[in-house]
Amino acid sequence: MKHFLLLSLLLLPACTQVDKRTFEISLKNETVRPISVGLVKNGPPQEPGWIAPHEVAMMAPHLTDRKWGWVIQPGETKLIGPHSGKFEPGTQGILRIYAGTPTIEEMLAFSRDDPERLDIYLWPGKSSYVIRYGGARLQAVAMEESR
Image (cartoon, rainbow, N blue to C red; front, side, top):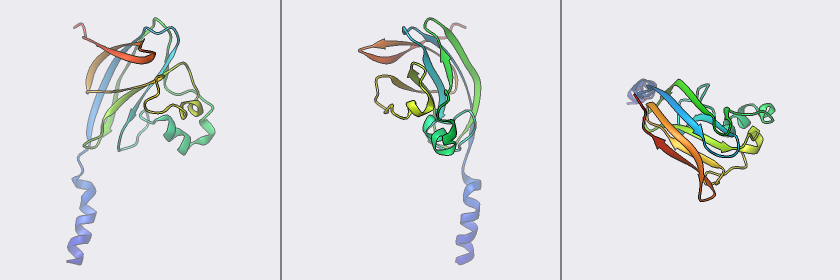
């Protein structure tokens, strides 16, 4: 019994399915100020290109005075990707958007429901959004891809 339990624990990581997913996002900033955008995940595995501001602060506090992600100016459209990542079951890709150009340290003050922060849960593949203010908060309007 002891050997079976040990063998089960050793094989457990091999049973975890990890999928590779690729995202390509077109974003148009229709606000009156710049927005800062980046990709994060809500679960494992952790990997470069998918690190949230709070994770940077924990792993490399000396970098918190720097900017995070990409900046999109008012009226500008930016294509992000194609950008790939590995995802365990239940983990989702998220496009995180902050109003303005805050540093990583300043981003830590934004709560999940802050009107100046927006999280868009992504489906793999191509997507397109217009970012604007509605009701005094950031909002995303999904646009159909023209093919």
